[in-house]
Amino acid sequence: MTTLTAQYDLIIVGAGLVGASLACAIAQQENASTLQIALIEASNEAQDFAGENFDPRVVALTQASQNLLNNLGVWEDVVQARACAYSDMHVWDGEGTAAIHFNCADVRANHLGHIVENSVVLNALRKKISQHQQIRVIQPARVAGLKNGSGVEVQLGDGSVLVAKLIIAADGAQSKVRELTEFETREWDYGHKAIITTVQTELPNQATAWQRFMRTGPLAFLPLPSINDKHFCSIVWSAETELAEELMQLNDAEFSKRLGVAFEHKLGKILHTAERHAIPLRQRHAKTYIQPHIVLVGDAAHNIHPLAGQGVNLGLLDVAALAQEIERALLRKIPLNDFSILRRYQRQRLASNLVMMSAMEAFKRLFGSNSLMLTWLRNTGMRQLDSITELKKIIVKAAMGIH
Ligand SMILES: Cc1cc2nc3c(=O)[nH]c(=O)nc-3n(C[C@H](O)[C@H](O)[C@H](O)COP(=O)(O)OP(=O)(O)OC[C@H]3O[C@@H](n4cnc5c(N)ncnc54)[C@H](O)[C@@H]3O)c2cc1C
Image: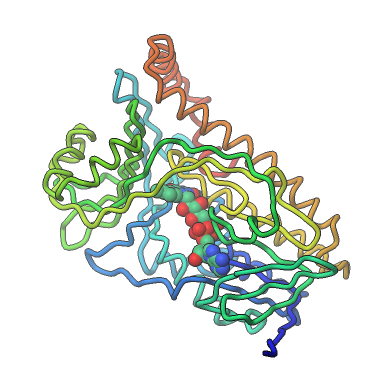
């Protein structure tokens, strides 16, 4: 049997939020008009959600991520489809008395960020990708094998072969490319599952992101736009696996009741709960992001607990850094796979991703502890933090990605 081999300048595996953004960021560069880019995606096209039907997967995008999407020419489409700006954030300790409140006025901003459905951003990116002639989307197609020599040879599930000097793995947490190329990772199970769904609440969400920390894990209510005078939030309830499984077994009415109690009825009754999904949570960080001809970006390189809503925001910072290095290579006519280009990307991103991941791990342990000492420490710390305006400003700016 003969197999067709197609030659590209670069191959991006995975057209999720990170891979699709990266394809746009590279294709829009001045010197990239003749580049041949293959974008391989395993799933079918993103779904459309409308009216009172929301995508269960949402992300809290920082100002830095908004700026990037704006530079790609997709932010306008995102806002026009639907996005919910939030002006406040309430975080409190469910096992104690301490709370922190952040408001966008603290940092003289109009909002702290936006809650956006994944499918809304993906659809806007796909529309932009269709305007870039250099990008060939290959979908649905799954990378099944890979040979790395003087270039990379990628085998798809249907037996076809693609060849390039550089392959970028944006294929998410379970990255096949990372596995096939034997990147080493540090990883462990959080012992948590995140239950995600959309709920209708009795009271308006006040354009506020709410987060209650419990010993069994954090519960977040993220604001969505109101429709027909009905009020909605997307929830992420991270709970120890046993509890999460018990919650998944409940019928909708029982689940809504348990959720209302866990959330201390801050927004009145939970009137309706949409279909629930449970996602096992794992901490994972590749020890290096690069090998000759291969780069990891986004969740393929790093996975963190969703408690701070930073996963895709870190991935989009990877996109900005790698696109900038590729732009530099194109300008100076350096081969894209030149190891100095890849090394510069890794230098910019690996250490700072590690800092964020360590901070989230410390946070999770601080709130997951029964110890009286740690309970005292987090309550005292939270109360003091809430009263130190300058420190709060620094934290808000860091969370917004504008420090
Ligand atoms: C419950 C929860 C809540 C979250 N909330 C937030 C938040 O508020 N803010 C935030 O910043 N982050 C959040 N995150 C993290 C965020 O969702 C991820 O960081 C982000 O989706 C990663 O994007 P990605 O493109 O790297 O990977 P993915 O979104 O996983 O995309 C990978 C793509 O690769 C494709 N693919 C996989 N394997 C193959 C293959 N072999 N061949 C071809 N294609 C393949 C997949 O189909 C997919 O489209 C949350 C995560 C969870 C679980």
